[in-house]
Image (tube, rainbow, N blue to C red; front, side, top):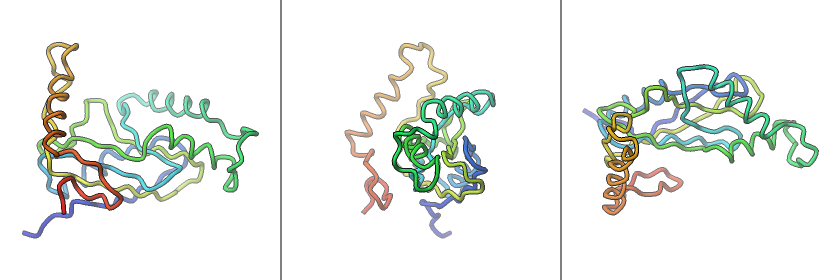
Length: 188
């Protein structure tokens, strides 16, 4: 059997501004990689969109987040100077700077270790419809932690297993900073 491709390119077509759930696409990439345990890094190569993990059970959470960010960074501010591509030009960059262009999600038993109501979203900050956005997934081999935070018996101690696992992994060199080529930690 040939080696499975660890770094995969996903093409996501957005329908304009807003949160677009991509959990299924990322889960499919992890399945294609054949990774049982490790860390999946999702990276977006754009400066006017971002990635977030948010609630995917109640659509009102999505609407409230979108409305809040629009109020926080409105279009048409007369102090903006970077407006060559339209009124959403610099606001989209500011929104991306306030959120993130990469996520790291543990993989346990071949599945993303997301919470019961968590989903992965591409947050499009531009108003253009049908934009193509590319994100990369890079499932990594080192196991970071296997703790189930949502089942901890004592809320005040629920992060302790993860903190210990992360400390062990970082002191053992299992956690590295990805460089521009998205090499996995410990790879040549």
